[in-house]
Each structure stands twice: as structure tokens, then as C-alpha cells.
Length: 193
Image (cartoon, rainbow, N blue to C red; front, side, top):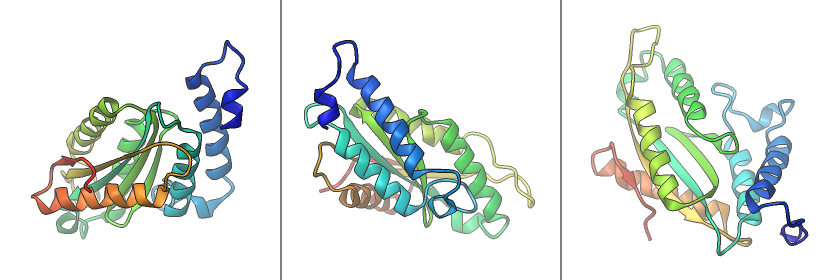
């Protein structure tokens, strides 16, 4: 946060965030560190995501844009996973990475994915959530057993400012996801509580 106060007049908050995000991503997601990437999908592990969300919260400002966490669960995965679960997860991971900004991070959950969107306003998060739902549900995913169509549910949580808990933010998004799936799936739920 101290670096933010030392910005030259020509530097903007967005430029600062992009520089900080690039430094954080380079450290956390170093290609040589296999323990930071899911071996199947290449997305961030739970530990790497936790560190990334912590870093995003630490450079965020209480008065500025939020850090958003999207928990995305694949509706009906259990019913189709027996056919070719690896191809399904890999295909969804590719679609999610293509559907987020360069400085967002996609990670794995046991039955889906988690995405961190730093420096974002709530309207942007809702647009991103609906865009990701459309990407996942768009075209059928090719698998060895034939094309598979899936829908998804989304849980959203927002935080900002140093001292905020990354673990709590991810837990809130995951709880909102569970609430959306319990309601029948195909929903984007705001954080609960």
C-alpha cells in the first residue's frame, strides 16, 4: 500500500494495480512451481488462489473497486463425469481462462472452479459471471464419449482493503454457490450473510 502513496502524478491506480498483479502472478504462478498449478487443468491450486486473493486484498483500497471471488460449480457434473471427466474439466478450464481478464486468476474447486477478479466494480462482476455462465453452457464440450453439455451455478463474494480475509471471501463465494445449486442450479447468487 505504501507504493500507492509514492506514485508519480502520471501513474494511475489502474497502472499500479496491473504492475502489482503482474508481480504477484509471476511469484505465485511461476511455471517452474508445479505445486501451484492443478496438474490436470493448469489452473491455480487452492493454496495459490488463497495467496493471490490475499495479495489482491492487500493492494485494494476500502474506497475503491472490490476484489471479487466467483465460485463456479458445474451443474450435472456427476451425471456426465463418468464419460470423460478429464476432458470436461480441461474444456471448462480453457473456456474460463479465455473469458476473464489477463490479470484475473482461475483456480480449481473439488466440483468446479474459483475465479478472483481484482480491481472490479460489482456491475462488472455480475457481467463477468453471466458471461462465464454462457461460455460454460455455450457449445457442447467434446469428449471421448461424445459431446457433453453442462450448465453452471455461480456464487459471488466481494471484499476490499488490507486486513480482509481471503479465506473468508472464498468461503462466502463457495457458500453462495452451494445455495445456488441447492435452489436447482443455473444461478448466479450474491454472497450470503
